[in-house]
Amino acid sequence: DTEVTQTPKHLVMGMTNKKSLKCEQHMGHRAMYWYKQKAKKPPELMFVYSYEKLSINESVPSRFSPECPNSSLLNLHLHALQPEDSALYLCASSQDPVSSYNEQFFGPGTRLTVL
Amino acid sequence: SQQGEEDPQALSIQEGENATMNCSYKTSINNLQWYRQNSGRGLVHLILIRSNEREKHSGRLRVTLDTSKKSSSLLITASRAADTASYFCATRRGKLIFGQGTELSVKP
Image 1: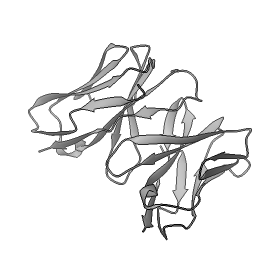
Image 2 (image 1 turned 30 degrees about the vertical axis):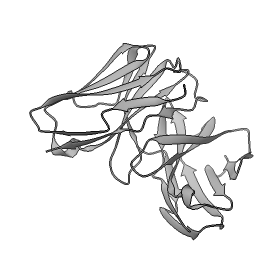
Image 3 (image 1 turned 120 degrees about the vertical axis):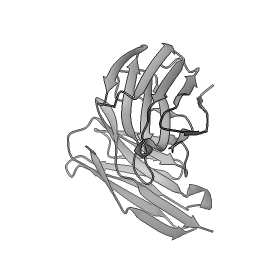
Image 4 (image 1 turned 180 degrees about the vertical axis):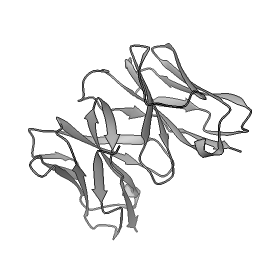
């Protein structure tokens, strides 16, 4: 299984809602990532989990809260988002958190719209 | 901050033609990666070239790396409509940093 899955595919939420994005991989990868991508822009790193511990937080606002319940799952909890947070949220994983030679495997993304 | 800059930003060609995309980066690297993204979808890793390699092939893809000029190019030969996508170079400095991307359109 060389797939990273993400749910839901689409999400529309109001600014007062609380929702969660989910990501799963069964490749035994020990690094997992959340990226945010705006239209016609490259992905921007938000968080990195290395061996289930948060290793990088790219100064992301606290209304985004990541969680890694186990080595296969990654969640992104959303609360009190702003319309400018509307974007494609991508999850990725890689085998080794340390090696720079690892490719990253991306999920299909969750298209988030904040009203 | 973005490590890579790509050109052209957009490229439109006919099926069967070759497509060349360029990437420039600012700091030293130990490898450079290319990814493809179909519209609104996740990224797919295409190829990784190490800093001690000058050229690498994978199927219809040819990647070159010139560390003295801090630049790389991706050549897709005999393009197909299915190659229509955005292409990003990426370098790793602790984290993976993507270039701005080239939007390739291959017309049948």
